[in-house]
Image (cartoon, rainbow, N blue to C red; front, side, top):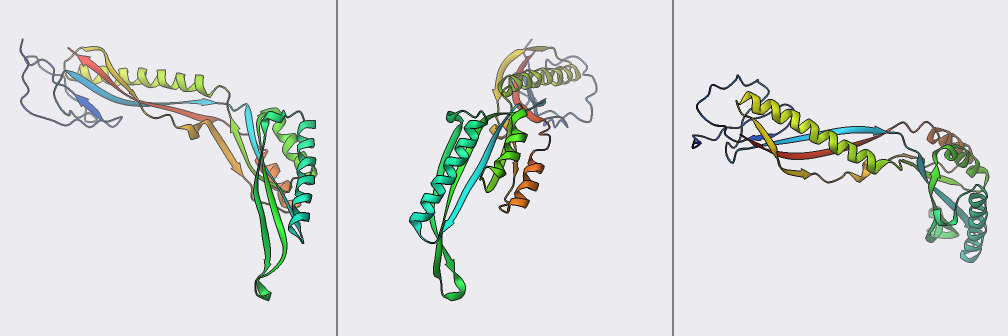
Length: 252
């Protein structure tokens, strides 16, 4: 039987944006719910968008520390920073952190100005950032607490991650496609059609920021750092891993 397209309608669904192709004419259609509208009646395809979320408990952490030193001249400042840095790295290794998990980056030496006396240089400051990765979640609390006494004078950020992110994302993808099929079946039934196989799937870009959750602390005073460290040492909670897809189904 030849199928005819008489007009273009638009279907808006509360659950997603949906494109629905025409079904065979000649049979009475079931009432269409108010939450569904029809769009682009062509090609005998239903297009459904779906997103699903899966929670995962983080089991790893990444810590960002800073070692800041000040001295009256640039050379003394650099030498003191090197000594402080060596002490911190020794502390980290003694805490079981592998050398490959310790990354250093220098921001250089900056002059310290006395603006009240006409921009006079009164000394120099050097800051070195240390990023510590692959820290087990059970070790994070003690490492943060002990770092203050080890010579670290700034705890910039704590990032919680999950080593099971990829498999969790795969599960979210499966759930999203299954949800899309449920929606498509409801639309096909409402239009008096039979849902056929999947003809196309588009995965939206994986949101990499969902791989972690971060806590920042800008304190530099020892007492404030200790308080900030305690706050960042709170339970990390769960990470939300979301997958979003667009699926096209054939209709008969």
